[in-house]
Image 1 (tube, helix red, strand yellow):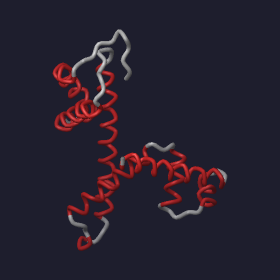
Image 2: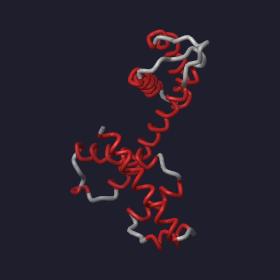
Image 3: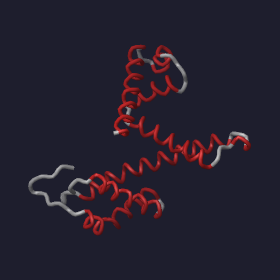
Image 4: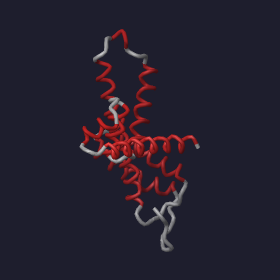
Length: 172
């Protein structure tokens, strides 16, 4: 959110004091859990703190809601990944269950992969997953998605480049 000449800057501690309870109530309606709402409200203000940019008095609730909405989506995605992982584990013989530390690490990796792929267009993501996870060739991906082989190649290349950029940016 950019500042205009007529905007005033709200100190983060003032925003926190005046809007935290509103944000927490807003999140509680979305999540149905007051504890998760409190955690995500806190995370929202941490994001603002880390962002280290001035906060305009023009629409502070819209800014908070936008950041919180992204955190809610991340939360739901994490929950879905965890449920899918645990369902897959439940199908395994008990003797082959990984340790809690390995399960935690696997969930973190799955979450990171989901975040990387989240920035891709659906068709590009689907082509990439078919190519990487299903082991299909570009021609097979193209046939399955009803696109040309060249488009399938471009989608996979685009996804690889996107993932590379995300990893490279995180390393900086």
